[in-house]
Image (cartoon, rainbow, N blue to C red; front, side):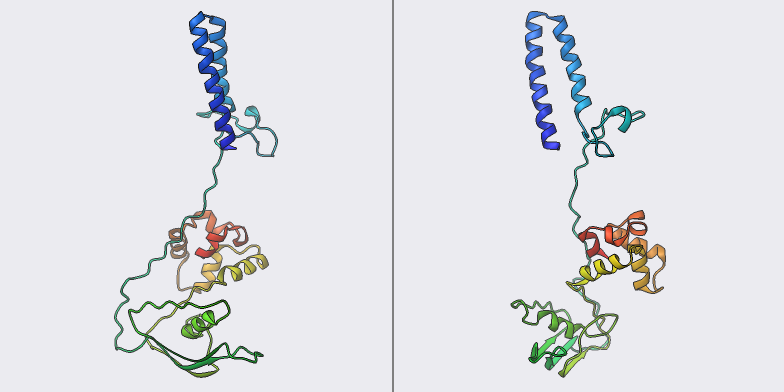
Length: 243
């Protein structure tokens, strides 16, 4: 709509410029008045062409009262801003040394599966390390992360079928799952009244006040009524990621 309108306006302005040059050359007063009228029409025709109910835009119906322009501007949709997550470059020192996570001959088999997804995995992660896991689809990357996370701190991790997984007793491990948005969408579809504010208050279980939760959501781009009134089902994919 904006591109078509800009093209139309440019054509009208070019036509007016040519007509104005010709009118000044001949001194045609009638032509000059017509040009002034056409200039006003550019302002009247620039903006929304469709009213609130989908019909043709009418100034006396869709834009009543005093306004600085004849029409409302076309609202250009924008993509969701990137999520900003602050991760400290250097985590605080632990009270006593040791590996954060240690897997020794860790094996995991899903219930009912004939073959193990992971078999006798050895992995040690020390404080300060950044580890990337690469592999083909279905090779067990998410399962390995699940073993590292474990079922603690509210995380739905895994426990090995065989072998051992040892975690530092002072380490706090959190995980953002690739299925988190899908689970949130399902929850939002089931509970139509669920909002981002209600979801966060439920997750924090009283450890954060409503004001603190609003501040947290606001820092991620979910302000005011968007956090408290808009159902989760109506939020965009990017906004669901923030929650």
